[in-house]
Length: 595
Image 1 (cartoon, helix red, strand yellow):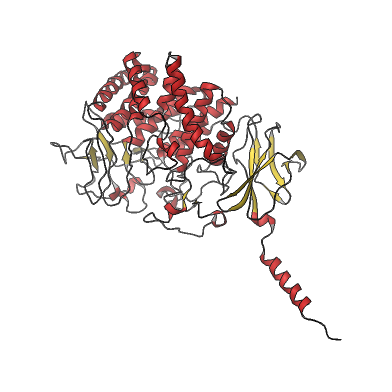
Image 2 (cartoon, rainbow, N blue to C red):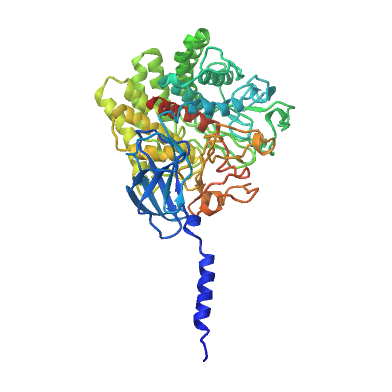
């Protein structure tokens, strides 16, 4: 009897095919907020899969006992996104127990997470670790000083190449450049966080950033460090500087205390004078058109600082109140943007708006002085830019519209006694949120943020506006989107990782950020918010990018966007000082909202 080989061949091919196909456990994942959830909050996990499988139900399992505490069926399907064929939102908001849990759907198991009212307690203090580590001059992390010869003036018509003492402030990121535009905003953001949520912050460090209480909350110590530097960078009316150093700094990783980059005058670094005109002393030049964007940022930081620090440093507070008035006056003499300057590369902060800076300065000066002239001027400036443009446009060049959130709209709505004007400014805030929301509802992560460079900073800006809008109105329309963006930063994203270095301590967080502290010296850069994912098209076209080791997130990369936990990727894994400082408001608000 002759047997056919075809059934045997078919069986062999089927076995080979099955071995080559990934199991569901290798092709589907459940993403959660790794920091955790508050009992009474919106709680959603995202099930992502590279197959056509659909979760029909899910369980919440107690980690300690292994017992199922909740059976869930509130599942919504949202289609393909990025690297995944399908995404599903698993909503368990009605699960109110506290404890340590994981989610299980079939054979797919999520990472462990907590549900408790205190999951955000201490979070705002934690990110201040990174701010202290970024200090220039005396660095408390290294217990040593750096850049003590800053600097020599560039761009002044008379004093060019002469010395001025501008030691202090913070390094902008992993390089050691220092910008007023980001530093003034960071200072204001921390002062703002304290102003709204003072009881969320502790006092464990002194003014030098060393361990030990000094009777002043740590966040105010950090803000004062920024204000001291801003005073040096603006010693008198109209005598104002915009940055220290330029991209000649980009000569590889080294600790700031071991910085040997020379700009031609020994150990001094260039200090760029605010001219309001195009600058750049190398191949590339910026497109500056005026002084207002920089001068108004000085004004708002000085004005808020004078109000808050009066109880601790009354003479200093009085001095910077006068400087705030001078800076705002100077801003009005030359309306336009003062961009940062580059030298050897085409990358600089391309700020193209100033009306938002003028609005915030005006409303802050009204709050400080009670002079209604400033309130009226705030209306004028606010009407010129109703919505921060990136929110509507869904794109931007690098730092094109900065700060990424206009706190002036909130301040005006909070302080104005005119109900019509108040409603108008709340409407401006809502318009920006509507634009983000209409994009977000199209995908399973509820992401409405463009994946441009520093996308996480945009996420923080959106979170800030969402929380402030809800405070003003009580409107619940955007609460799920707010929760989704918050969860995104803590791991409910395609890569399953928190975007804050070292936080939460037991979760997946960046371990190989673009920083000399960690890449060369293996010092942790805890608290730093990394840039976040970028469009694949951006990543593929940036200069000087290279992955140093095998991509641990390779499975989750897509033609849409990428994120790499690799120090060679400065576009997605570099912590930024201003993004980190901007987190202090939202994290402190979350800590207090759930007490």
